[in-house]
Length: 217
Image (cartoon, rainbow, N blue to C red):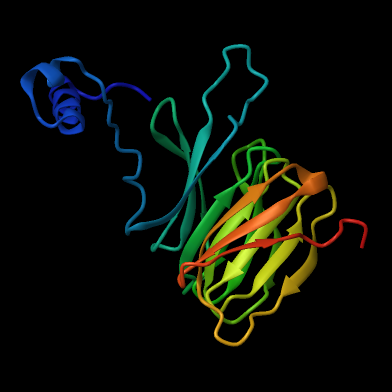
């Protein structure tokens, strides 16, 4: 990301170090706004490989965001410019986003409980490859595993859905919420696809471990 004007750089460095003049001179932090294209607050953020990942110069990755304005946007992290956007259906309120560096997929969850899965095309445009609602409650969290094999979708009512994102995209199964299930607050995958485990943190301070359904189904 290119450096901002000297004054902004000095202010950022001072903020990061506590405000001293000596710290400001170290120029430790560079801050550039890349979110000006959204007309409302952002609700999700992810990073994908560069669109031209084969270039000899090794282009930087691109960022992907979603916001209250009902759009998903791609950003060039070298120029800090918007390079693509997808307008969601009118009234869609995105609330969660995950991006998979392994396969270039973008998962987007809405307040209405709808999962949308997009594939980024070489042109920078987004192609919708899956639209699914596993529960009526809002999507609370999304997470791809490191290999790009699984996507976990957590709903506010405690339902957890597993989607295969390797080769053929398909639903593998849904863990129904139990009575009094707490809202999931975060998801994280452990292990490779052959021994993947999903960790689920919830609002009631519990941490659960789930094994995804078999890919052979």
